[in-house]
Amino acid sequence: MGRVLIAGCGYVGAAAAKLFQGAGWSVEGWTRGGQAELEPGPRCLMRAINLEDANQVRTADGTFDLVIHSASTRGGDATAYRRIYLEGARHLCERFAEAAMIFVSSTSVYAQRSGEWVTEESAAQPESETGRILREAEDHVLQRGGTVARFAGLYGPGRSALLQRVLRGEAVIDPHEDRFVNQLHRDDAAAALFFLGIKRSAPGGQIYNVADNTPLLLSECYRWLAGKLDRPLTAVGAAPRAGKRGESNKRVNNAKLRQ
View 1: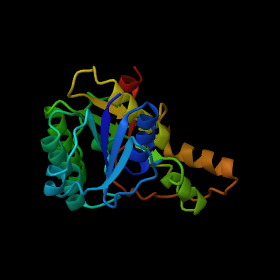
View 2: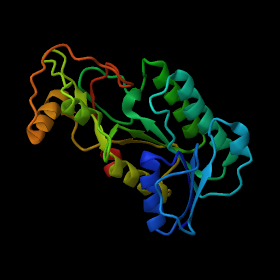
View 3: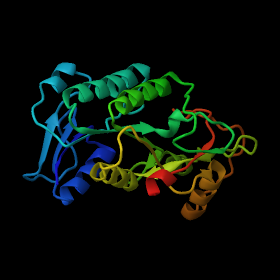
View 4: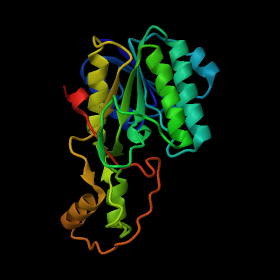
């Protein structure tokens, strides 16, 4: 048992908090508004603390065995990335120097384009400014003996970008530029954070890819969803590649975490 701080107790953080609660841990969750979908109880406290504000973090009371940085910019720009991820990580590392740290990053830091498999040992040299900021935040945590969890694209209750494209009739299959997508269910993401949090006997400074077992081609994903939902899928042409994963095309290997 122990005490865990989840800084960014939102979509994934709240699900992870419930797992820690169920295992008898005391949980403190931080969000901008101090609210999250958590069951009230003696072992759960929610607080309104902004990670961007060094003074708020510095003056926050309490000690923790584990600190999880799982805050999100919700699609913000480079300025938001720097404030939430990099500065937020710095503030937490400074305030809770004695606690074990887990930083939630993204598989978007892998910029590979040839459909190759990538492991934690593969080059992580993102081309975007936001990706480079994530890498800087990762390095800051790793240098202090923390753990980095690189999440694939999240889906789950109420959230799936690929599903929504099919439902809106916006899914486009590009026969000339198909690519692999790497996804991660919200509940698996939460379970990974819980597992990494309780298995702190592993040496610090570790990176773990957190993704579903089987990457699949975007065209396969669209066709499977359309078939299950009995929706037409006739759009064929040049597909836009928006989002932080940009032009990348890789298959994320999760063997290190599963082992």
